[in-house]
Image 1 (cartoon, one colour):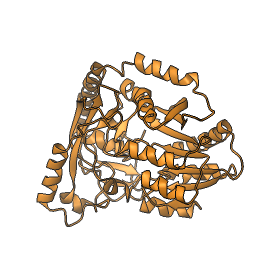
Image 2 (image 1 turned 60 degrees about the vertical axis):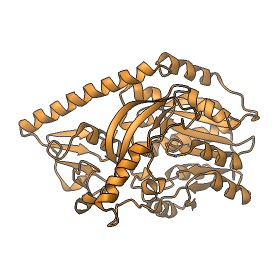
Image 3 (image 1 turned 90 degrees about the horizontal axis):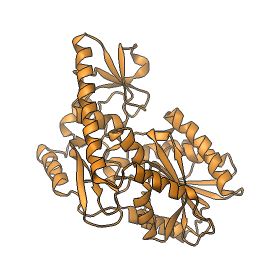
Image 4 (image 1 turned 120 degrees about the vertical axis):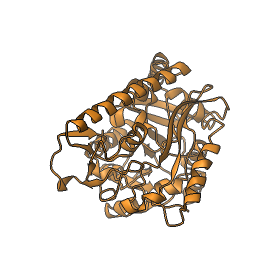
Length: 400
């Protein structure tokens, strides 16, 4: 089983085989509706997993995979063409929620909002899928709720433990839900913030939800909004961990297969534009609000159900690519220093796709101890502690 870092077992032939394998095993059926009408609209080339930070002396072992995006012309779910091993990507994941101050503040506001919206009682249980270091669950605990995290991460699991959060160290799946159901675990709320599109099998995930949901349970899914991605040219949301990016219609269709529906949907600015869907069983007493129809209308007006929209999106990205590379080349010719501000996984997509390396961006500054002292995947820009260097002439802002 692969871990976060490539090991000495990753020989040149194995790396070549992995690269070839990812090309040969592109998805042929839609993750959502299971139809076969998939159109590849954005090929970002061979890239490493953007969250696998190696030391400089390990880069010859780096694994690369196909990174390209497809859209289903039946339900218009946008999805990754190839998904590497989840164990490889998530077991030693370097992202730590608690280091992201805007996210922590968002969690505080959202937890209070969810508690008031749903009308919880003291002692009700909240399960957070992909709980990371427990930052979100800590907010619910302040409102008198019992909390349980489900997350396979070894590093973040230890951080959650230090935060007083109990974590079941597993990927969420049908089997996980079945196991918890056997323990008579009955949550009032299940949350998944920036998680519900990080899985290889959406249907298996939903089957796990159904094992523990009754007619009073609400599944709250915060997801990057494909409409924002299109309108704001946010192609850097395309990376191997994001198996898909939802708009409302394909999500409704996928949930309906399992007897679930969206009760309400809200829009948020977090992560460049997200929606927060409140999902219930069909027989829930909670009625579907007008917000769902409004979101469907807005997606239609944005052209999300036309293939031309996706091709136009790529042309806009290509223009941005030419402009940014030209600017960085100009600054280098003028002897200006340029650092990357942050080393998020989104930045890895941008840097690798645009071909930006240490010749144009000297280093990246970070606060995350799991990234400092290593190099950005693929382009191998050194990552340093932001406190150890002075100010450059310019920052390329990757953390947004």
